Image (cartoon, rainbow, N blue to C red):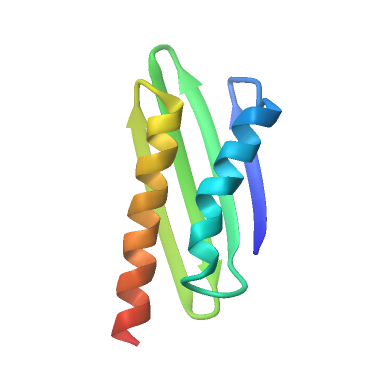
Length: 91
């Protein structure tokens, strides 16, 4: 799994990076060799997490906006996991 984390209009702390990586590790067991790009952004009181995953024959995207960045990360990973499970079972 290749993971890239980008922060826009905010500082990316080590704690935030490791938290994001830990949440995305559960996606690795669904599909091998995923390339995941995460964009975390902050605008006033809104925090957005956009996750884009690409693999062999798979492209899934999840974007969630919330007041809390950690909640946005959790929900975006859940959206992405749901899409990857659906793709895995349909093939």
